[in-house]
Image 1: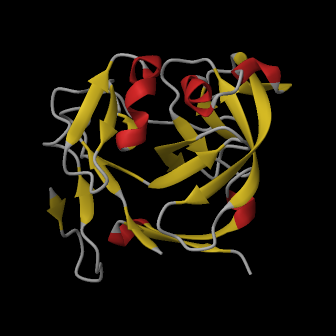
Image 2 (image 1 turned 180 degrees about the horizontal axis):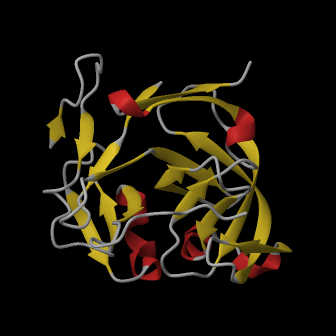
Length: 137
Length: 71
């Protein structure tokens, strides 16, 4: 499935930024949530804002504790849950996924190696502002 | 909202520069086709009751360049 990059404004002295956003649905045993996450090959884990846990009916900090660190070098606690994730409009894409929750106000959703890249084939064509995602054979 | 970026691109990019103008740093619930902002709020927890109606996104803060990557 081909997905266009999403264009956002940025600083006046820079060109607009394009982000590889994929629409996914995350399932818990009780509920589900649809969100648009950054496809981020540099993220070791798939990471969601803890606010999604309320929608999913789970206690975000009840999962397996782990520590994540960003480019600022600051360590943050995150909690990994065994959930399911599918790419919206991609048939047969629902997979069991380890997804971590973090309580940081500026983190929405990073679709990283564990929980996302491990399940799908991803090809990026930034020059054409598209990427495509398929289920792994 | 959609624009063509390249001759070899069959799909136009999703241009959010107008739709999300004034919503820098906000959390939004977008319609399925991403042409309308259904709800917006300063925090995700304020949108929990509205999430079922669309797709949730955080609007990047203007004036910043996004470097995500957690390890």
